[in-house]
Image (cartoon, rainbow, N blue to C red; front, side):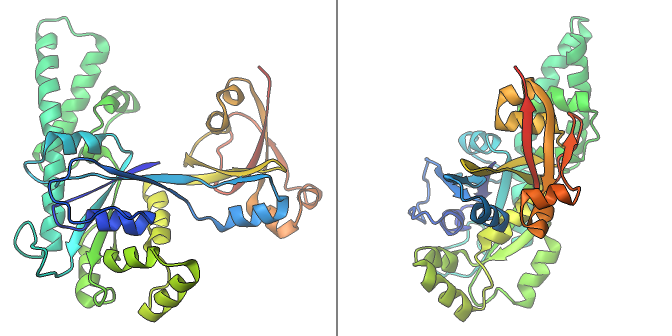
Length: 351
């Protein structure tokens, strides 16, 4: 999963990036061009427990790649910033809610709700520019009678999207058929991407009424004191816990953020286990077993016969695979079985 971090200038995007990933990238580098990249493991207590049980040679956690996209997203965004944002699967809006007289807000003063709308407008305008060009081209083909059937479907889809964008609504609100959605997928519309919002607050404002108000007003949002968490990330593990306790912070925002990301993006995890490897795999909710098998290896999807399935909860409750089978919780499933979060799967195949 690849998540892009975007926002207005001076909102603390790189500080958030460092806080989430443990990186030590330079902050406050206004006008920077290169994006920062970092991959983090997805914390999962289930993987830890399975590793203790199977004692594999290797344990592989799911991971998330964060991209700190330079530049601001607004009503006149740099095309390079927009292009970088199109390459990710989801977006994180960083909204400034901290006061710092040494770092002037790009719009003069703090107003998180206004900034959120400003980012939305920037994304909508970027999508409109793409849609307008393509609609104009397709309309000419249709009027001349030379448009292919799939191009007519694409035009219908784009016109639905454009209608929403013109009303300052995201493309995600357009009601598209599966075929229409497929025809416009390559455009990577920014307002089709799921997003989370991080309200970057001061350390003394995490529990404030003002922040609570903004959390209610701004969709998919959570507070984070990025500056403090960036400092905590540089500490040794033992020192981190002491510092978090002193500040009254239950856990680093990364864990909360990942749970929110999985929920917003509609993601789940299944596991493969054994003496060689215990591994987590990330898939979309509603994925059939044959497609999940392809996540492991294309040969497993191509030659899929059946999946041997039992749940993590049943295994933990029983204590061993043998006891799972004795309890009748071990199942054989076909291609159409919808994989559930926490399933442990072994694929039988032939190619």
